[in-house]
Image 1 (cartoon, one colour):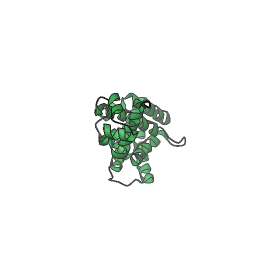
Image 2: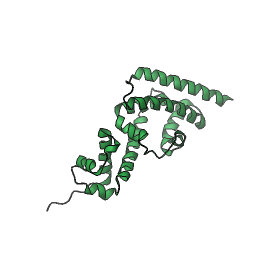
Image 3: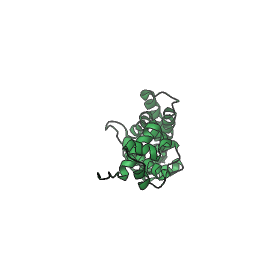
Image 4: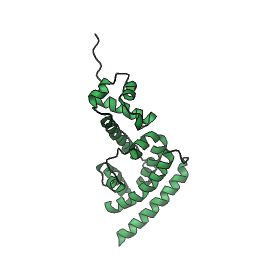
Length: 190
């Protein structure tokens, strides 16, 4: 009898992310994930007692992928604008994962203010702070403005309501960033 192939937990999570990427997070279940791995449902259910726990693990992995994507900014580009454009580009390139991350209810943070205080956002805010030369509090304020603007564009695009025009979006994002930066800089001088 041939030895049983062991399927590690991380392979199952990666397969669940791929199911979400291709078919949406609602398609994540023991059958779809095991089919992707060419195995029975037993390894999936061994590592994850519930499908919800599998979806939460897949969500965390998708969130890590998203964070890496956001931080891949060309050196010559302003960090805040780069992060904003990458956020929107992610919605264009990965609409199913975008919906999973921001429209599924699986986020731990239940508000934008909670998200700004999350540990996962620290590297993003630090890069933005360095580029803007503002205090962390003012950087958070600028981020909030740009994030709301970028999220609006990204959500509309991910849900097929708007065609992606990078030049136009970059121009609008830059206006939002400039306005938020000027307002924060004026308050910082007071």
